[in-house]
Image 1 (cartoon, rainbow, N blue to C red):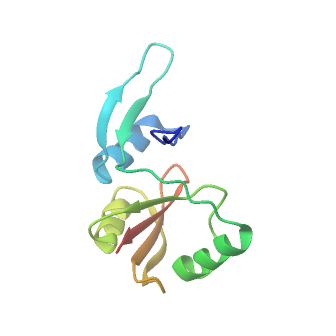
Image 2 (tube, one colour):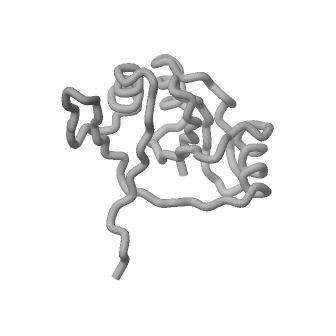
Length: 128
Protein backbone atom coordinates (compact mmCIF):
# COMPACT_ATOMS: atom_id res chain seq x y z
CA UNK A 1 0.00 0.00 0.00
CA UNK A 2 1.28 3.47 -0.87
CA UNK A 3 2.28 5.74 2.00
CA UNK A 4 1.38 8.89 0.05
CA UNK A 5 -2.19 9.35 -1.16
CA UNK A 6 -2.04 12.92 -2.49
CA UNK A 7 0.65 15.30 -3.72
CA UNK A 8 0.11 19.03 -3.20
CA UNK A 9 2.35 21.76 -4.53
CA UNK A 10 2.22 24.83 -2.29
CA UNK A 11 3.09 28.11 -4.03
CA UNK A 12 3.70 31.27 -2.05
CA UNK A 13 2.87 34.22 -4.31
CA UNK A 14 3.27 37.98 -3.93
CA UNK A 15 -0.01 38.87 -5.71
CA UNK A 16 -2.63 36.39 -4.47
CA UNK A 17 -5.49 37.82 -6.54
CA UNK A 18 -3.46 37.69 -9.74
CA UNK A 19 -2.32 34.12 -9.03
CA UNK A 20 -5.89 33.02 -8.28
CA UNK A 21 -7.17 34.59 -11.50
CA UNK A 22 -4.36 32.94 -13.46
CA UNK A 23 -4.49 29.39 -12.07
CA UNK A 24 -8.22 29.11 -11.29
CA UNK A 25 -9.85 31.32 -13.90
CA UNK A 26 -7.47 31.25 -16.90
CA UNK A 27 -5.99 27.76 -16.50
CA UNK A 28 -9.30 26.37 -15.26
CA UNK A 29 -8.25 24.57 -12.07
CA UNK A 30 -11.34 23.89 -9.97
CA UNK A 31 -11.38 25.47 -6.52
CA UNK A 32 -11.83 22.76 -3.88
CA UNK A 33 -11.48 24.79 -0.70
CA UNK A 34 -10.92 28.28 0.64
CA UNK A 35 -9.11 28.28 3.98
CA UNK A 36 -8.54 32.03 4.06
CA UNK A 37 -8.74 33.83 7.40
CA UNK A 38 -7.86 37.17 8.94
CA UNK A 39 -4.23 36.06 9.02
CA UNK A 40 -3.92 35.27 5.29
CA UNK A 41 -5.36 33.79 2.13
CA UNK A 42 -5.18 30.21 0.89
CA UNK A 43 -7.22 28.21 -1.60
CA UNK A 44 -6.83 24.62 -2.78
CA UNK A 45 -7.18 24.07 -6.52
CA UNK A 46 -7.72 20.67 -8.15
CA UNK A 47 -5.05 19.91 -10.72
CA UNK A 48 -6.07 16.32 -11.42
CA UNK A 49 -3.75 13.40 -10.81
CA UNK A 50 -0.38 14.34 -9.36
CA UNK A 51 3.02 12.82 -10.07
CA UNK A 52 6.51 13.78 -8.99
CA UNK A 53 9.14 13.81 -11.73
CA UNK A 54 12.74 13.79 -10.59
CA UNK A 55 15.36 15.09 -13.05
CA UNK A 56 19.10 15.31 -12.80
CA UNK A 57 20.73 18.48 -14.20
CA UNK A 58 21.59 16.84 -17.53
CA UNK A 59 18.01 15.70 -18.19
CA UNK A 60 16.53 19.03 -17.09
CA UNK A 61 18.88 20.76 -19.52
CA UNK A 62 17.88 18.35 -22.31
CA UNK A 63 14.14 18.90 -21.74
CA UNK A 64 14.63 22.68 -21.60
CA UNK A 65 16.58 22.51 -24.87
CA UNK A 66 13.71 20.61 -26.54
CA UNK A 67 10.90 22.75 -25.13
CA UNK A 68 12.52 26.18 -24.98
CA UNK A 69 15.74 26.01 -26.98
CA UNK A 70 17.93 26.74 -23.94
CA UNK A 71 18.21 26.15 -20.19
CA UNK A 72 15.43 28.27 -18.66
CA UNK A 73 13.69 26.42 -15.83
CA UNK A 74 14.59 26.50 -12.18
CA UNK A 75 14.44 23.82 -9.52
CA UNK A 76 10.65 23.52 -9.86
CA UNK A 77 8.60 23.56 -13.07
CA UNK A 78 4.93 22.59 -13.27
CA UNK A 79 3.89 20.31 -16.12
CA UNK A 80 0.18 20.04 -16.88
CA UNK A 81 -1.59 17.86 -19.41
CA UNK A 82 -4.20 19.89 -21.31
CA UNK A 83 -6.49 19.19 -24.26
CA UNK A 84 -4.72 21.69 -26.56
CA UNK A 85 -1.35 23.01 -25.40
CA UNK A 86 -1.15 25.72 -28.06
CA UNK A 87 -4.63 27.07 -27.28
CA UNK A 88 -4.02 26.94 -23.52
CA UNK A 89 -0.68 28.74 -23.91
CA UNK A 90 -2.42 31.52 -25.83
CA UNK A 91 -5.13 31.76 -23.13
CA UNK A 92 -2.51 32.00 -20.40
CA UNK A 93 -0.50 34.64 -22.26
CA UNK A 94 -3.71 36.66 -22.57
CA UNK A 95 -4.10 36.25 -18.80
CA UNK A 96 -0.63 37.62 -18.05
CA UNK A 97 1.81 34.77 -18.67
CA UNK A 98 4.95 35.23 -20.74
CA UNK A 99 5.55 32.84 -23.62
CA UNK A 100 8.91 31.20 -22.96
CA UNK A 101 8.83 29.24 -26.22
CA UNK A 102 6.29 28.40 -28.90
CA UNK A 103 4.75 24.92 -28.93
CA UNK A 104 7.03 22.13 -30.13
CA UNK A 105 6.55 18.48 -31.07
CA UNK A 106 8.73 16.52 -28.67
CA UNK A 107 10.70 13.35 -29.50
CA UNK A 108 8.24 11.43 -27.29
CA UNK A 109 5.29 12.60 -29.39
CA UNK A 110 3.70 15.29 -27.22
CA UNK A 111 3.03 18.88 -28.26
CA UNK A 112 4.54 20.99 -25.48
CA UNK A 113 4.30 24.72 -24.89
CA UNK A 114 6.27 26.60 -22.23
CA UNK A 115 4.98 29.70 -20.44
CA UNK A 116 5.97 31.61 -17.33
CA UNK A 117 3.14 32.52 -14.97
CA UNK A 118 2.90 36.06 -13.60
CA UNK A 119 4.30 34.72 -10.30
CA UNK A 120 7.43 33.48 -12.11
CA UNK A 121 6.59 29.76 -12.12
CA UNK A 122 7.37 27.99 -15.39
CA UNK A 123 4.67 25.75 -16.79
CA UNK A 124 5.00 23.08 -19.45
CA UNK A 125 1.62 22.54 -21.09
CA UNK A 126 1.59 19.18 -22.81
CA UNK A 127 -0.84 17.42 -25.11
CA UNK A 128 -0.15 13.75 -25.91
